[in-house]
Length: 183
Length: 454
Image 1 (cartoon, rainbow over the protein chains, first blue to last red):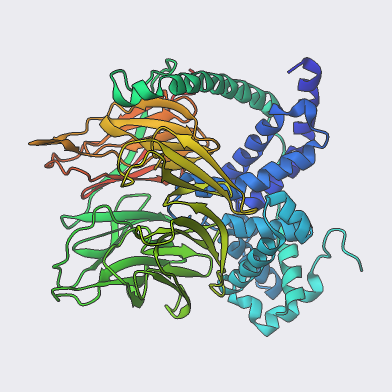
Image 2 (tube, one colour):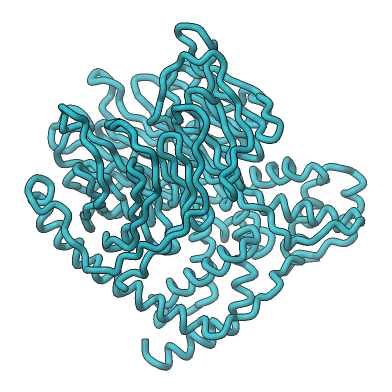
């Protein structure tokens, strides 16, 4: 790597680290060590092709998505992975229905399988379309649809509060609009 | 809550949550560059070794000098034994790790829970009227959402007791439901967890039933003819890998995807001849077939590695010098060879990458030198790129995934026991370390391997 590339890589890492770490934290369900490792692994892969990558951000993100859904099953191929511990970072119940619900949903998200969580993060945090998710993960649109459907069903099972009417009423007014949403 | 409201809640949670300290650590970019350089050096060494492995493959398989030596690497003997526990009972068949716990099953206990932090036995579920045999090569389906899926005798005390798949609530040690299986295999195909359910070997040898994991309710069934089908879940979706069950059956193998919600089958790919399921590599299924006229899969001889891309159904086939049945990790198949060595093959094209002796003592059965103890299957830590193995003697070794060089050795004191040929201890990844089971001994250890090429 020549000094110019090295400098460009260093600038990229320093400017984008926090954004990439935030995404990695979501993908790993709040495991900080896993998240940092995921970012570093993706950056190392990018480094191998650094000179040829036109869109480093897109490349690194795609590596993170794919690595996250493959790393668990590669460790022990014949066993379904168990679940990550729900992170404490989602906060503490403050007595308001909306906040409590967000905490519950946050913890439920952490308990999804890596593939299920990755699918939801791509759809709802990265705001990718089904086609874009399919391209990013190297699977079919049908797989994206069915996995998203199953992930949401599982989320409802893990957070039964989602189907409690008063909680529903409480959460609706406080919600954020999705990134790039049309109103 | 309707779909739109749920969408908004999820977006809320994801967008509002931020890690507390997300600034770039000082010098992180330079550290990544250094780590990348070290890995490149190890890869280069591995590639050189791979070429040597191909050139001398035939000699290595049959003659002296088996175990091409990789470049020398400092071997660490550093580790931290966090705990060691002697389990109650005399015979344990299989274990699985869950959140904060290790669960095992054996002849006298349908389930036992051990605190993964301390090694203390937290609960146990005794088997009723024990008279069944052991199945030490068996497995434990797993644990999910506080429910352990295990096996128990269907009719305890009966001469042919049969086997139930049992869902056991870990907290209350209550049996939530049970379902009778077609046979007593109790292996990794007998029950497979997938998203939303568990795929059980029932009601016949040639069918599976999907059970609701919370209630045991039957969701759907799928049956087939003239084939034996291995099962697995890939990305939460159940797949069958089917191979002809006799010479009279159509001589082709199929990979079939089962819709998790309906059980509707979709044939992903069909290949000629019988095959055995090896594992998965990313979104590809790996199958092994015989290519030298062998009669059985266990017979020595050339083989075919078949790679089926699950997305496109595309099939590629590659000649291999032996059937590469083993653990698949990051594009590498690790095969436990004879005489206690490991052979690494590329999962992409079947190239032999390296071969290395584990250096573990594996005792022979007296009077039959062909029967000996086995090492555990590999457990691969992709962060450090080390493949770990455990011997029945309590000795452990960690090989560099890319070169085969020994990077770590460790040992745990276990009571001396008679030779049990063909039986392997179990090694499981847990947190940043390993949990091992040898007979009734369970332990947790954190290896500290030397860096690659250090």
